[in-house]
Length: 291
Image 1 (cartoon, helix red, strand yellow):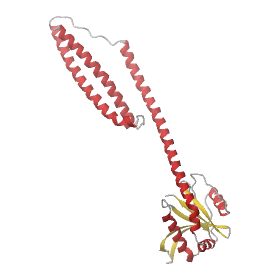
Image 2 (cartoon, helix red, strand yellow; image 1 turned 135 degrees about the vertical axis):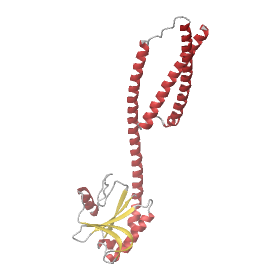
Image 3 (cartoon, helix red, strand yellow; image 1 turned 180 degrees about the horizontal axis):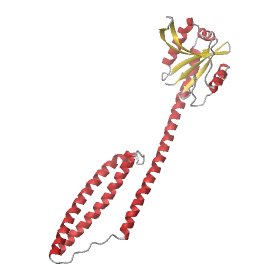
Image 4 (spheres, helix red, strand yellow; image 1 turned 60 degrees about the vertical axis):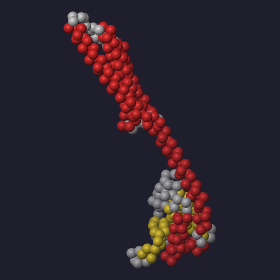
């Protein structure tokens, strides 16, 4: 009986130790899963995320089996202890927790806290790198699209016939709308990416400029057929755009920084423009803006 009792105690110690070890691994896995999925901290590599849940399930299952074995061994040891007590034999006293075990529990708590802090720092670092990579990719796409639009501008400017250019010099009379509107729509349909095409010309007083966009034949409130959607401007609302447009109509070739937004110029999206000249003077600015 004594040999059998020792076997039960060894089995109990073996199963309990394995169960506790697997439980620690399962807790670590659950902690990582909660941090990654619930707190949305990006700490796990992509190749590990797909295996993390499966590893937690396997470790949890093995832990359950080990605890079941430990429970059965505990029941056997308890039964043998009761039998030994009934026979008058001395019962073994349970050993108190040693200082090493207590120190291990404290160290485990500190390790968990430091791990959470480390996971947070990893998440911040990876998020920062992801933002930087996203910005770099956005900048690459922006520059690529803008360069494509700039390469398109010379052909766009040459597409306007002398009669159309002369009409722009006259502020675009209603009789000349259709030809210019058809050209703006043709430029849009013929350009890669179907960019928005707008035209800015001088306007008759009291207005300073007008922005025109082409559309199909429509009737206005007066019953007249129109082909251009016109936006008259007394002046431009921002100082930087006011100075920029004034310089452009004087023939200056300017590059507006990214992120500017105005009534006509909007560099938040890739765009490019070209100058339309009549007898040496700039009479119109055609703008291509990516959609």
